[in-house]
Image 1 (tube, rainbow, N blue to C red):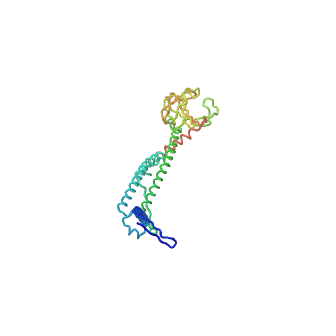
Image 2: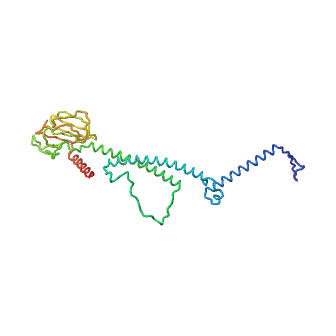
Image 3: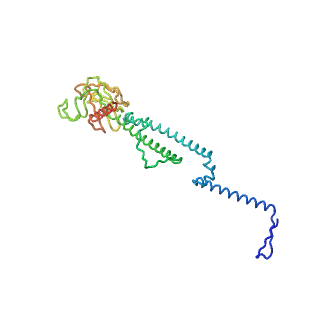
Length: 316
């Protein structure tokens, strides 16, 4: 094929020769450009349709999410993801319920006062002036994610609370708050008194519990035995270290059942009352020392009595 080009600017006519190869390449280029242009128009139409343009939605009823098959696939995929998320949250809630019950027990709260197995009551008036709004899929997913984070934060908080309460409970178990002898009164209190041997005023660093020889003596708190020996003044003497620089001393015993280094528990039978050492009769001389300084044992024993009274009230 020969094409002749003529123009007033040309001094003579020009000719261009096109072979069949040139024609074929031109047709292919035209088809390619037309196809690309059509694809661009289709993409623009779909995007406008998804942006809630009513006219294009009516013109394109089976494109994108308007296609029932595509919509079903979208819903199923989101439901599967949310079901997985829901399963994880259920596991976290079960762990949180178990943790809450442990904290409840440590805090001494009655189960009927705070039952983790029952949903709390909720309610309130419906405000007609404020229109209700339904959640769409993205809003529901955002609410689910926010709830998951809230559950994780509360679980971490409950773990901290449990650790603190457990520490307080362990510490309270190590305080000498149990009366070492089951008697109703003490023969001599803490403080200044007349010495029974000299008759002079002397400071008494403990409490004397009068009871028959052989009466059981129990540990006022858990701890480690640091002394189980005979003392010239205290006779058969036992000392228990409860940690926190707190030591209890049990003197004038007739028999000691533990030895140096033994770990004793709260309320364990550790000795028997006697009248060994500097003593006028069978009794227990009981001391509480903090950092080596004698303290009034009544302060600790009274605290233990108050705790027992509160525990009895909670059980009623």
